Length: 221
Image (cartoon, rainbow, N blue to C red; front, side, top):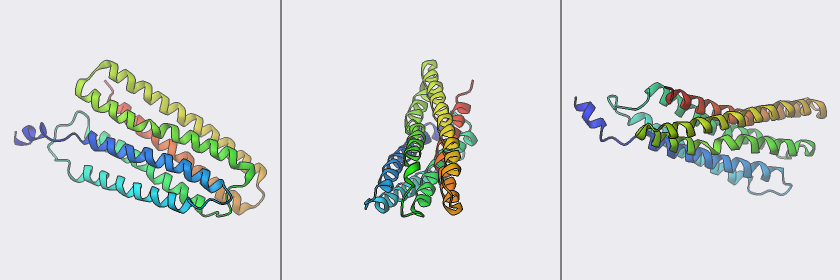
């Protein structure tokens, strides 16, 4: 009973989940800026932007560890803990893929081939859209689990559908871009590098959708 009573006064882990989502969104903005910068001929800020992403990823890891290490075993939660941690895991993987995409981008200092620059920019724009919705999704979840409002649940389901649609659009762009890479680039090493880069960029949206799917499971009736 002591654990039950103390859990009533414990800060909701969803609050820290929201802080983690904010870090993810910030990284999405930096990804967009870094890719545009890298495509420029005289960009001097790319290394600084990648360092900022690494710093945000480290701060997000601190939040993640704080959630995992300071969640009392007996705390009452409005959702299954396993589903909650699955959501956190997928949201955190968004950050990992942003960092990985920037690493792969840095492997080619001479920049993206000009004939692919527009399509890669479009792909980056596509994958950042679902990421930007994650803080809003967590904020809606905080309100929903307090009120159990059907209207809030409806808003969440609509947002989850939006994220899923953005992921499908990004997936389509990724496939089309791969076709163009093989059709236009003759150097096998460059083809390999670009395909891996595009896959890492595409995986960003995949994990954003996976996170939204975990949230959908948490609000299932």
